Length: 603
Image 1 (cartoon, rainbow, N blue to C red):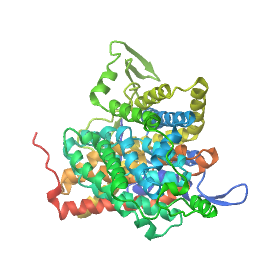
Image 2 (image 1 turned 135 degrees about the vertical axis):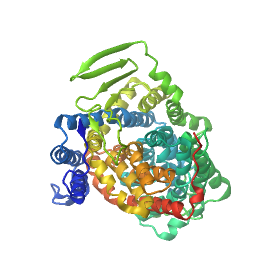
Image 3 (image 1 turned 45 degrees about the horizontal axis):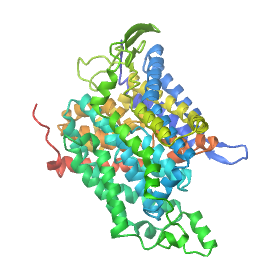
């Protein structure tokens, strides 16, 4: 039994520094290591696969040498992270990119692009509609990087630069994350903390709506500055940004506290935001001056046309498709949402997991049990399952050893739902055999580097979890006293940055947050929920999410591999600032407006 030690060096500060070494190494090689390319041009950061590899090596050295974790257990933890990541995340993104590629190959994506453009010809508003509102719907149905992949690919298809698309979609994929994949983060948080699920959801729904109002403005300002625009141009579209964010926030607030819709908060809020914003732009208000991409403005000026013309017809952008053609082009995305929503239903998951329950098997793999039913086999990870013990104050006295079982829910996994949507879409689009082949090969080629990086980063995250280095970093926040509600947000932020998932961060620190709240006599509901809401701000800078964005937005393999560093450096301060906003909200709710904290029902 490996008992985690939270002060292996005999000095709390030194132990914390040692625990942070793998993260520091990863960050250094992602964003700070200086090198010159073959043309002598100086760059910061190295190719993503190598940066991840160096971080993994550092994690093994710290876990085994400094923390005393057995090497076999460390290897098993890394393997569990990689395997779980493939089924839980990589499978989703692969299937989503397959669907997107089929839409492009079939030619129907051109109609999708035109239909989006004709909601608004203003590029600022397209950012809001696609990255924020539409992305939230995808986050609510499948999560785990899918909205960044899908919405990012859509924006590149509309003419946005790959770097722009990646940054803007990572920035937008924040406020909805706490209810991603049919509320999986909230469900996990309730399970590990022992608190009421709906109450935790309602608490998150009283923090994140403020962020939902802010994000559309944040997006527009970031985009306009990227295009060399002014603050005035950024705030010219404030009515539409307020409509998009405000409508989303209102529905988020009400849906998150209901028994019926709290797990579908993102979906209903995203749909409501898209409808309200589209109707607002169509019947109520539209910007007097249109903002286009810099390249588009230059082309129009060269052609003697006015780039700021509010009407699309001024540039000949008449909508050439019928309602039937438009609906047919959107069918793959409608199918995607329906399949993801179906796969997110607990009863459907249960049905799939029990589909072949009568077919059972049992064997050993590397000396550990491997077996179960055909529809839900599992592997007890060797040298790891029930052989790691978390200790107080991270876990309660007498807590059970950490389970380490790779459950192969191949039928009920969210990625399977996305893959089924892709297959159905290919049939609906009537792809030829050559188009099926082209779509498959293009997807595999695009995803090979991201898969390598995501697998390594997830393995690193699991290694830090089972070795206890994550807990050491988390405990560094617990000495904040009355300021703890603020730093609780950063603990969740750290968890997402380490693991790439708000769900994983909640599993990692949910119990610790409750224990700390009890020790400091703070409201447990507030502190525990803040782990999830603070965590959403770490989503934009975790290596896994950035690589998903790179896979979706960059066609060139070299650019895809080297984009991680520039994107990370661009979003780092945005992420820190966002977590601070959540921290301030939590402090105000703890000490100034405690009446907004929902009360859990008596059991």
